[in-house]
Image (tube, rainbow, N blue to C red; front, side, top):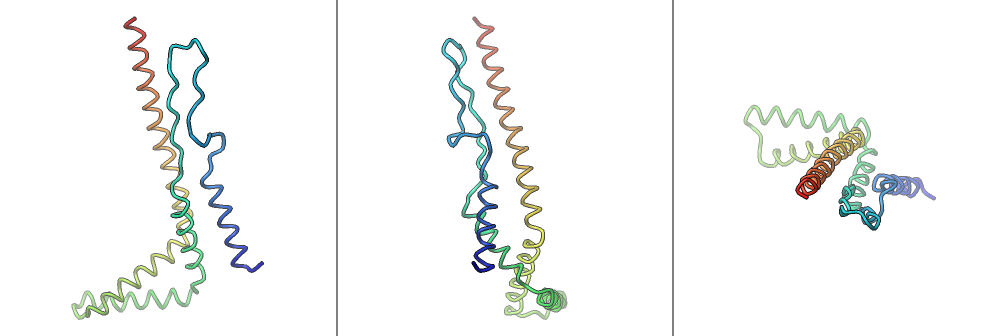
Length: 153
């Protein structure tokens, strides 16, 4: 097995781990309450983690960006600086502006390859926290609604 295929298998395994939530059914719903309960089933949280395709594409782009050597990165930084100097002097051509955009994009991809996984982890944690807050609010709203209904009886 080649190094690229082995690396791809590792990426696919990471994606599978990232997109599964232990203890949650496929449908994400809770079992209905036992017979005799007055309350209906509460809605369970939606814990999906986004598109598998988007995650795969992001990881593949990061894999490609990791093969760029430090020398190439330094060349891109020097090119960007030279083009920025021209931009601030007001002597940049349209072609050079396009090249500046491409160099900036390339440097962004390299930075994403270096720091993107940490930022993705942080984003996942923030999304999970926001999801918990949202689901708790829904739960408290359901409890309030049921306690109001019960007090009217």
